[in-house]
Length: 302
Image (cartoon, rainbow, N blue to C red; front, side, top):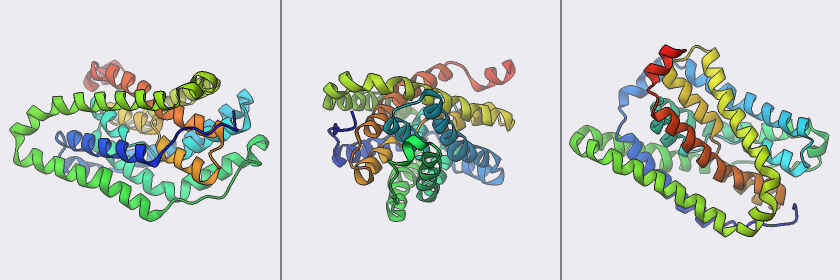
């Protein structure tokens, strides 16, 4: 398995990023600048989420690899993906789940900046604690300029444009929200289909070996995020945002790191690639369930 090389091209990530920027614009049609001011005034939710994101999740990934005696490349792939920042799709999923979208956008931006230092550190630290994965470790770095560009292009500009349009043309914003949601779901579903088709033979042969690991870690990530927010006594809308942010990782970055610094090691690449597919499926399913369950009702029941 480690000898295979997935069909991966940077162009596919560029196409996905264009879609994500458009989706962020649609999400921002339902946001206001005041939403971010509330987060700045009370940053506790951000701190809780970042602890769950960059400490609890990588620790969980390490534990999963150790307890299941996973193949070294699979175990290290889990740690690497868990050490990546939140994926940009989390903003749409939080919005669809009726969570705190402004908090989700803030967390994605903060975790993406933090990844410059914490993704290499967590990968090396937790990977080094497992004797089976320590031999596979490689030094790597994430470009600060690349991170700045990602935040600007995928978050800041689309969010600012969306909120500006919503403020100046509220009637258009109301009419555009549903089509934007349909576009997002359709685009992500199409991306999953294309990604599967491009590597179908590999997934049929090898993906079943990593499916259980990815499913378990993704479910634990969503649970860890929600649990940390619950223990921190955050409101339900914030719990949903933190849960999605911790459970939805930037697996695209993980793939880039695997190909650039780990020679495309098959086990690691399949983990990152399958995570990118599975977290869309799991995230949409959870968000759809939450969408039918208003936060006010959930708060009353808990």
